[in-house]
Length: 384
Image (cartoon, rainbow, N blue to C red; front, side):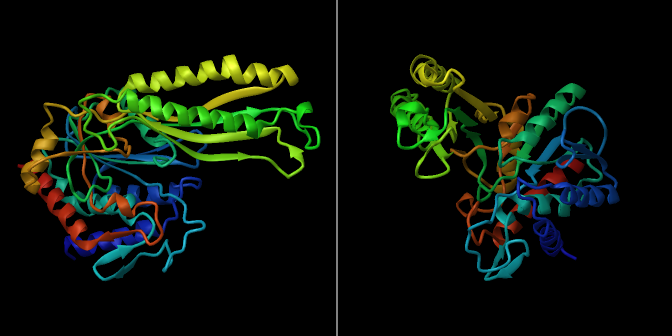
């Protein structure tokens, strides 16, 4: 069986695991662990505190520091309320494309890495496979994995994060900070709003503050920023609250995120919101109900990927693929986590990010072939 056929077979198996972030990924992780164990890798399955999620860390080649990480996340986004033309958890091939949830983001890269893993068996340096949980909900698995590597003193030299980049070499991206802000007010009858603390209305005022901060962040944009857009962004993903037309809502929550181009922007936003709540919103809420609260839950604060002047994996992949330049992207990945270990990192994988998270998500076969060519070159270099 050639590399492309093997990769397609593995990808079909991976797609059949419905690893939506809200659900367990254990069966998928065990499938990959069994595969890598069978070809001689040293494999660890690292479960989270709930026991329902896990990361996989596997190594081929010698023990020791250095080496290369091939990294991908096993979780996918939901398919609920999306209009798919085929079963999202059964890979469907048509017109040179592979359809299914996760084909592009990012089980395609994982399948290619697994298919090419035997070629790394004779590597003269460690080759690590890192497959994580809950990337889509704050890079929770990646954060746990990097912490475990730090505790063990493991520092890979280089890493490729196989997010869909159309096989372009990405050497920098913004951070991704995700939060849920909870409002607790006081319920009451809608006929007399003054006797309650309307949590939804205070949440709306908080959202208005976020909108105001957007304009401040545009003004703070670094003159040399090469991102698109070049400034730190804020997005309100959801405002949830209320039970009926005639009830003063006692609870509400806002799910929001920011994508900082510089750490100082994140500090600025958090300080402003803290002062706004402390000086303005909370005094008004507590004047009616002393038990009123506003709390912000940190879902994930994942640092960005900083472009590095010295980056061996960037230079090697450029030589292997013939790329004559690199790019920056606004979306976040686990790359910055690995960079925090002192690892030289790029993001490079098959598929177009424009297809991610959508119904009829697909991965073009020519993208998968290009990824396999890159991995073949990496294996030849590692075994030379």
